[in-house]
Image (cartoon, rainbow, N blue to C red):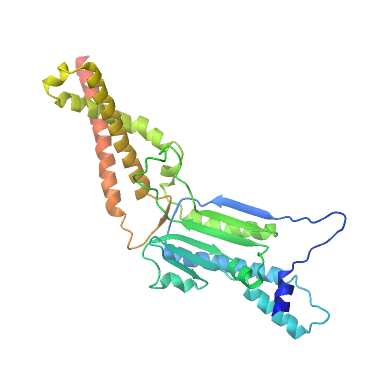
Length: 311
């Protein structure tokens, strides 16, 4: 077995005493597109990656050379052993600290699967690395991170894009294989792209602030001013200004929470599950947004009618 590991683990390298050592590889590292996925998708993804891995095994094994002291039977056994090292490994992380590492796709149907999955990874290097203590020359790591952004997080600017920890990472000496794996992974993801990925982009919050939030804030402050008692008019101008500034920033932070809530309700990468009940939250968010839009439209319409009557 040790001789097999030595023969499989040593790639053919052209050595030249003058030119030195040269290594060349191709890498594709791109963030995952926004998508809505389910467990059936991950079964399909496993078979896609498994086929890619088998193709890689055939390519690499075909490069093995029979040794002078090796029989054909031993060489055939070596090739079978080498192919057995090319396995797709699945890593499943639960939101409560659960962790599953498996090479069995049926795990997605298992009752042991975490109720709330926070991350799923596919990679093809674990079996090879553990067996030979060497890195596989061509490998992939596909990460699906379902972690949602926090609603109450005032340390992060809402103007910034939501950090995307889901990524497609493929690296290898075989450029054709690297490109082929990427195309086979990205194609089913593009078919499952969701329609709310734009919500997690840069400066989306600023657009909402100036187009929707600001008019609602000014209207709310006007309504509050009209509802204040007469004694407020005799209050110090400095104190009144301070109250208006406080109210303005209070409303602005309320809308910041609403925007963060929208990003939480409509995550960048979404996993459909019977236990994840987002419809209720989407109805609540829809009611909030609709009420703000109606308030702006009502005030705008009332102003237009007043101007028309006055003219």
